[in-house]
Image (cartoon, rainbow, N blue to C red; front, side):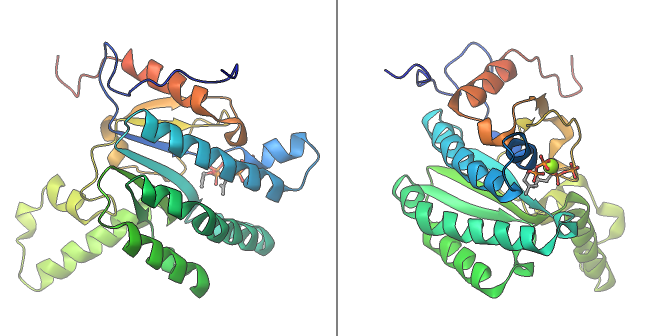
Amino acid sequence: MASNAVTPRLASDRSGQAARHVAIIMDGNGRWAKKRMLPRVAGHKAGVDAVRRTARAAWDMGIECLTLYAFSSENWKRPEQEIIDLTGLLKHFIRSDLDEFHANGVRLRIIGDYHAFEPGAVRMIDEALARTSANRKSTLVIALNYGAQDELARAARILAQQAVRGEIDPATIAPGHISALLDTTGLPPLDLLIRTSGEQRLSNFLLWQAAYAELYFTDTLWPDFDERSLAEALDDFRARERRFGGL
Ligand code: IPE
Ligand code: IPE
Ligand code: MG
């Protein structure tokens, strides 16, 4: 057995609680490349390998839902060439990995308005969503052009339109109305939110959904993240005491 092999262990096989839904802010690709005197795109390429590794490990551990922050609504501020590179990698990833996901019963979901990407990418995403929509074993959620503030503003807009049309009484609006209009509707509650690369901020990711998520920060740069890193985060999660405001 390879020295870095991880003993398969279910997310629920432990003394603590199971993590049904894990989200990751995949950060540090650029710094990983810089350390190696490589262009940033090399870091993003290595980041795709980490996505593949982590998604496979998550299925093996029985995690129902894995949500990955791939491109934020603020990442449009980056140089055009980097955006072109990231879009190309996304298309390449769908082409090379979708068959395996599909064969493993993984359903793909997107959060964020991915229609902002170029038409070829949008078409590939739509096809991937349609192809995997009936899969039930687990869900891989990719956040593309996602920003939690934008997501909440979109939900507010819909509620306001319903109120104007007299379909809803504003006095009755409750958290459940908002949850139901978010991109994550229907997904299990977020249990664990991981951020790599040592940064300790949310960068506009899942602000509503993280209300009672456990937060886990690691200095590991995303391209170095692997099965062992995920297992460590889950070990840490299992030892947490979640109170949800109770005693
Ligand atoms: C994360 O790595 C990937 C994306 C945001 C697309 P970065 O590109 O942010 O890497 P750093 O933070 O510059 O190291
Ligand atoms: C957050 O990383 C977005 C993704 C991982 C896709 P950033 O690198 O964009 O975040 P900031 O700019 O450091 O907050
Ligand atoms: Mg970054």
